Length: 412
Ligand SMILES: C[S@@+](CC[C@H](N)C(=O)[O-])C[C@H]1O[C@@H](n2cnc3c(N)ncnc32)[C@H](O)[C@@H]1O
Ligand SMILES: [Zn+2]
Image (tube, rainbow, N blue to C red):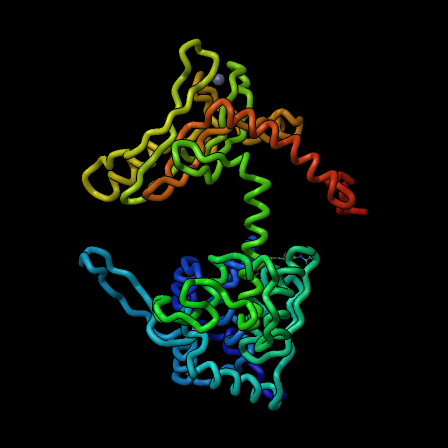
């Protein structure tokens, strides 16, 4: 019987795929993760490496193996940042790094994979495909792909990631009327590819009016942009009252904590793993907690511009840990008022009995220099309660409403 050992059984560019996977997490443009959020989505770099090493046979000798691993993952090099203080590792070469997925080596890999499967594209089945990283990369490697997922949201993401772009590639269709009537949208559409938007396409007349008769048809990407803006517009209209602009700063998000009643003093304890709201070099904001004047509970406040304290990195880290310490640790939850520890089992029991509650801790707003944090107003707390009723109305409009039927027991 022929030896069909695969590369992954004997070697793998582990370091390289880890580095490139971490880098990929910061890619915000053009990555499938920006199409729709999906939990547990695998990084494309790691998936590409795993597929290549699974589909390609082990070349048999340490030298050839090393060469193949390097062709997949490249070499790891150390670089020093501009300030000369931080050394970081990155890959050079290979096909895993974001942007190298169309490197000429990919043609070579496709050819090698076909060869390993008697000259035709192998079939790849992903029965738990989720956000589609595995089938997408398998398609990129020239395989015939079947993706399956039990979750309808994942199923739809898979359709949009794997099927529609392939089916509709190269096709154009007229833009919907609402897009034609949006000056910002048309400005971007008609000036696509212009060098910094300086040259005007002939569809826009000299006085800025659009000559609708000559507007070209749009490809899938522009239709997705148009309908994406439509959805955003609708959502803004429906949700604007829950996200008001106060002092010229639009509300971005509300931060919440679950609460449990302290088994000793019966006061409400927020369950917080950390009190850091932002901990970057230039933005250090934390939530403070102090007992309120009449001793009935705790009061939150926001401390912006938290100073860095400590000499060396380890001391600074230890001080930051102390400053941001929440109420939760591995051993359980410590009541900030009486110091009693409730174990995780105590919390679980309270949760099962339906006795956990929630509290709004802070509001994130969009300031002139990015995110800012402030305490919620009384009105916002009331609005959040009103939103719960709104939820009931929204669910009532959905066929079958909120799912409430019991799940079948595992043993049945
Ligand atoms: C860890 S996620 C997969 C993530 C995926 N590899 C990616 O990169 O996005 C596991 C997936 O399995 C799906 N799943 C769980 N049980 C399933 C079943 N019985 N049949 C089909 N899909 C199932 C879940 O809906 C979930 O999307
Ligand atoms: Zn207490």
